[in-house]
Length: 199
Ligand code: ZN
Image (cartoon, rainbow, N blue to C red; front, side, top):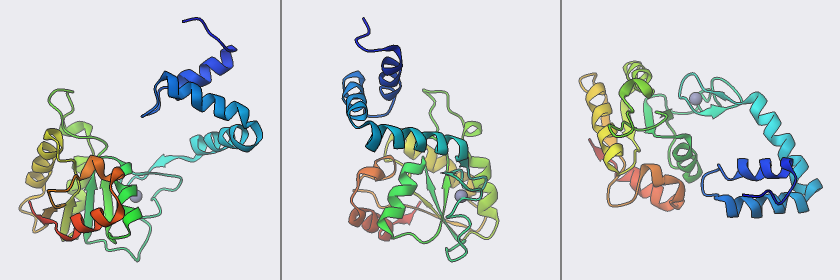
């Protein structure tokens, strides 16, 4: 395709197009919005990206991205260390936090088991989870997607934790959970958490 703008702008568009939910067309619209609002949007965004890229780390405890290690949630002594919520990615963690219904701690797996995509337990933070579950956790809440991979992962995790005196529960079914948590309103998340059941 012939470039219709300078190489820097084409590069910006091609990078934006890699973002979830943005194709080439949306990326062009986003780039145009940035270029039209150079001082209000483009310059502050560029500075924010540089700052975030320099400071972002994965929390060595839960695996969530933050600018501190341990992250703000893991370092919060007011939260319940005995309650651990397992999520696929940090997006679900952020959704749970927005709902304000969960006062325990989290564990980010970094994906789901998938035979099709060749994702095995060794690719996820499952060993770390088993280790944490041994250390004084009384309940592990699985907030994983209601997809085949999500449920396969949930069963595998539940089996690995079983026999350690830890209760394993899942968010209530009937409401979309896990990977779709980002899209749920806070009230639905609160309900799914309240109605969680033993796995
Ligand atoms: Zn953490």
